[in-house]
Image 1 (cartoon, helix red, strand yellow):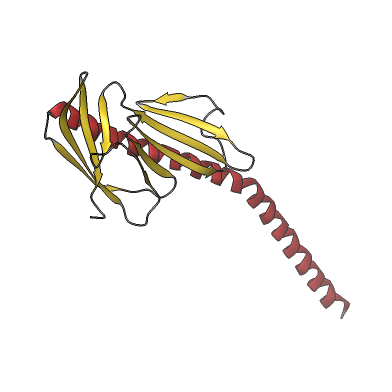
Image 2 (cartoon, rainbow, N blue to C red):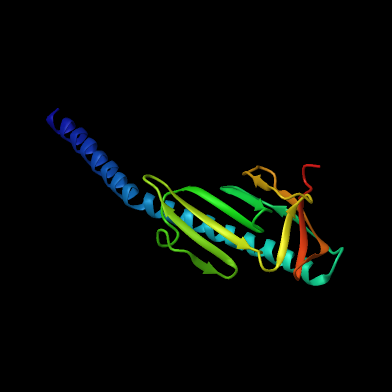
Length: 180
């Protein structure tokens, strides 16, 4: 009878030790996984902004009346803003568990400016494309700030060169066509 009880006690102890080891490993690995996930989200967003910028540059260089379509622009995390009043496009990703770059220091990755700011629990990264010296950006031929939130279906954008806006600037109009 005593031998049977000893086997059960050893089984319970070994199970508890195994569960404790699994908990320690998860406690160490989970922050690294979250950091890698956040880094991937920011890098994918930089890539998507570079694609958007290449389409805008294509339209600007091809002349008046030229149109390019972005058939699928997916936003899974963050918000895309088209700011016609300051001729810039920026993407705000908040709720990140780790900083992408040094806090408060702006860095350039290609044409994309990256600014990470530290919060108390979560952090925010802002990715910006500026067109102030190259183009006059409008949204649906209006000077406004247009916000695009995460959606399960991709957005579809049409980018059109409306011609010369004066001062050697191109008039570029961006319209979201997937919801029309």
